Length: 298
Image 1 (cartoon, helix red, strand yellow):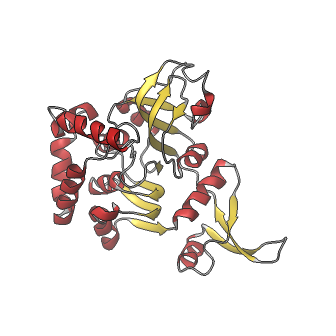
Image 2: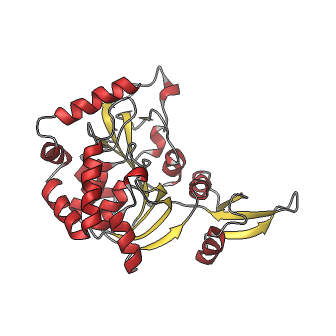
Image 3: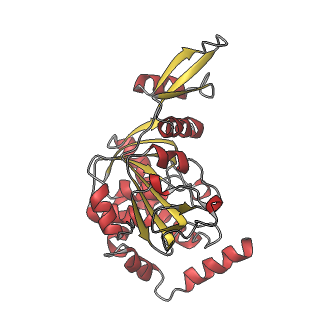
């Protein structure tokens, strides 16, 4: 049976209040904007959001008042600045934070993917992060029984639901991601449920003669959502570039206040992602330009 749903159906069925949400994407690349918008529309709150670089999707969820905690390697938009709503929420104490290195977060997902309670690492030894992680109960200092050297045991991270965006998928749920995957493959394997939005959904068996293209096999995917430009305004490798003007506008509002961001969300998200795209790019000229720009890059 195929796994294709609308974004509204997928989120209402599989994202619950208080869920631990594993967030795909990285900075301004392939963020699951379709699915995050739908979480906001449905007002699903009390979330713990986990990932490596939690960027624009996290800030929108925080601005909408839906996040209780984050566990992450970082939270920013790099040269476009910090996540202003998230930073203010952390400063107020309305969102708590479990700070990690990127590698520590990826290691926790890897442990979950392997079905192990923890994995050892040496990367945190001597860092200021380690003591806080030990206090939080997600890291334990130990000794390597083979070489009698210090190691850190990192607790597995098992999200209730993972949200990612992909280049394409077939109806059975085989997923193709082009370019960098970061932590996503292990995060999906670790998660109890995974929702994938994709630029294109192909018939079941579309990759049967080219299985090497499949990044994530169907066994790990719960629901599919077809949405062209579903990562907008972030980029999708080989499909379209990121929309710098959109990111700068969001960040300018973020510097002003949470209320300015909430007004922007209310004015632009609409009732569906297609409506959002029309609100932001009625003629489609911006999206066409982003496709052309990516074409010049690759």
